[in-house]
Image (cartoon, rainbow, N blue to C red; front, side, top):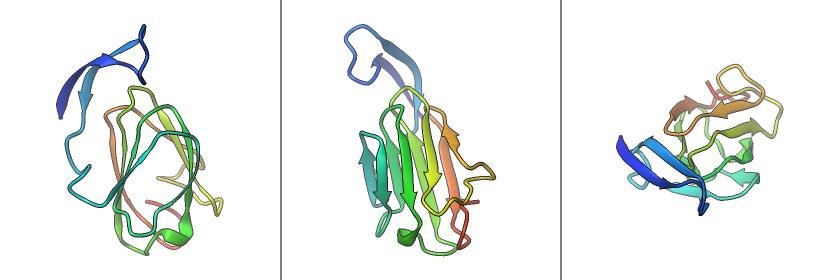
Length: 112
């Protein structure tokens, strides 16, 4: 973990003080997410969500049993959901808190 003290989501008035994860971002195939919407995970191993966004994950891009990392590095919680209506760690909408690394694998319907 790295200590971070600075602007929150580019704000000139709000700040975030705390830790951010170092790995696995950029060691693995990583995509940064900077807005709400649907993300295709084909060819990726890690998703770094930089802000308080609602991100819908396309399950067609997930391989069964392949580990996948999710990070929230924007200083605010992000929300994740699957496009097939499945669950992420047992929740239909998973809240990923800042500085948290979520490691899951796809079982064909859900991320656990």
